[in-house]
Amino acid sequence: MPQVLFAFDNVSFGYVPGQPVFNKLSFKIYSGETVALLGANGSGKSTLLKMMSGLIFPQQGIFKAYGQEINEQRMEDDAFSQKYHLKVGYIFQNSEVQLFTTRVWDEIAYGPLQMGFTTKVVKQRVEDVLEMLQLENLRDRSPHRLSGGEKKKVAIASVLVLNPEVLILDEPTSGLDPKTEKWLVELLLKLNLKGRTIIVSTHNLELAHVLTTRSLVLAESHELVCDGLTEEIVENHELLTAVNLIDEYSHIHGNIEHIHRYTHG
Ligand SMILES: Nc1ncnc2c1ncn2[C@@H]1O[C@H](COP(=O)(O)OP(=O)(O)OP(=O)(O)O)[C@@H](O)[C@H]1O
Ligand SMILES: [Mg+2]
Image 1 (cartoon, helix red, strand yellow):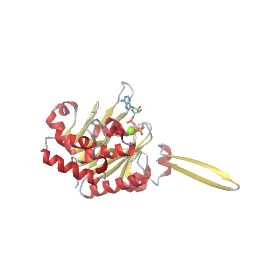
Image 2 (cartoon, protein in one colour):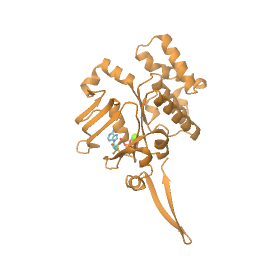
Image 3 (cartoon, protein in one colour):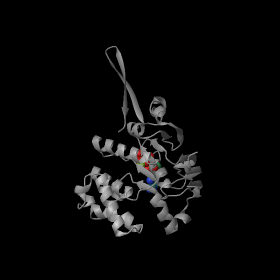
Image 4 (cartoon, helix red, strand yellow):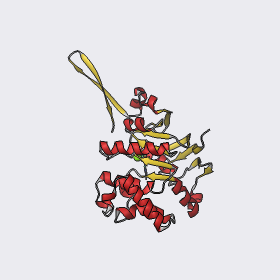
């Protein structure tokens, strides 16, 4: 039986009093899974991923990771929070908020240095990740002056360098060209084969399909309306239309009616 990694038990959360984003949400994620969080803009994907990453906490109900309740008090303990962030890596939807140094090399080295690894180990890890992500030629550049896709790669590198057990990626392929997107999917699949749990949020059904086995679907009302196999969910046009993940319209050319389905990318 795989280990339960994250367990949400009747979790409620809202940023503004009286405007809940989630109301009594319950589900589990198991170690080693590949999971997509699907939903339209504003459905709550980033909010849910932030909770898994220990950045925000339930206002009601219980969120457990590795069998332990994760709440504000526990995360205020520096030793606990450091250990948690070492195991659970989070890549923000917006790379800008993740990058803060003046050099790509320093950006990637920051996490391992904070975690107290020796200089020698840090150097080795940074070099390995630069090579793995093909970022060697950007090592001395300022992260803020990179292109959007390059920034994303540096943000991913700064998390992968810690070799986390769980990778939480919020819209990982937004802003990536098709070749880089394919490369990232292959990298994530390889990491999954090595036992890493991969959780991504996306409204890109193609990405969900190639990368994940299971999908959780959030409606615009922020409710979890489906939890099932990705390969079945991407074929469920009724569900996907209802949650605004595909627009469906038809038009007529002569006597022939065509149904067009447009997938958000
Ligand atoms: N910091 C915040 N303060 C107040 N409301 C917020 C905040 N962040 C998000 N929200 C609201 O919470 C809801 C869920 O937002 P969230 O960012 O989780 O959605 P999302 O599914 O990630 O959307 P997107 O696809 O656009 O990234 C939205 O209604 C949003 O307006
Ligand atoms: Mg989001």
